[in-house]
Amino acid sequence: MRRLVSILFSWLPPLLWCGLIFYLSSIPGLNSGWGVWDLILRKIAHMVEFGLLMLLVARALMKTWAALAPAGATGVAAVFSFLYAISDEIHQSFVPRRGPSVHDVAIDTIGIVIAVWLARRFWRMREERLLASMRKLVVLFIAAGVLLGCGPEAAFKRARGAEAAGRTYEAWQKYQSFAAHFPDDKHAAEALFRAGWLAQNTLGDCSAAQAFYNRLNQKYAGSEPWSSAAAFHAQNCPDYFPLVPRMSWVEGDSDTGGKNARIESECLVSSTTSNIPFSTGVLARSYFAGVNKFKSVEL
Image (cartoon, one colour):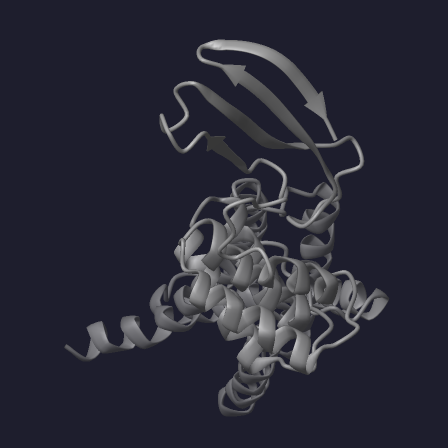
């Protein structure tokens, strides 16, 4: 029983650390929004997370494989960490707005090599002192990982990712949560607009959409283009004649319900349409007498 407990406590830290690395790599477009400092910190984090993985695996091997010398333990741990770094990049190739990078594997390898050097240099330190240092490093980089994974930039990108993947209700909730938790962020106005847009056009709830649009214009007046877009859509929800690209409606004579005469109207997307839902469009109208179309115009 004591042997089993020793094995468990020896291998639990590296397994948890592998799980944390996997989790961070699962976040679409992980970015703290700190510009060039974000790039520098992420590359340093790459070196540290795989260097620390090597140390944790080497420690577990030394505690559970008595016949393996310290040099052999660091060698096996280094090979394992290198292979895990490769698998981590393969994993990122399946994550939205992430991708595999040979440069990141090289940076991970630098961290592993530094950790091997440190392990061989300080292996004879008292185990308690070494473990205390490792615990501090684990706490530090878990905190850094949580900060990078839970920052406003990452939260907004997760909402955009859910919307792009067609998970409308999830995206709607994430936009609301973002606006509530990060009201001073640069994406707060856009988050409110997108929450309103999804409520209006996908969920079919104009009351909810109006609430988001009104809140945007009350709290973020002048936050273009979202303020203008919200004001426009607030006036067009509900609307029997929605002047919004991809919307359509039919007007018919009242005597026959449109059998004798009707006008079919559709808002087409123009070549100048921007990458936000509110954009310019072309109104195409077709005039029918019975079943025969006798005129078409674009406005």
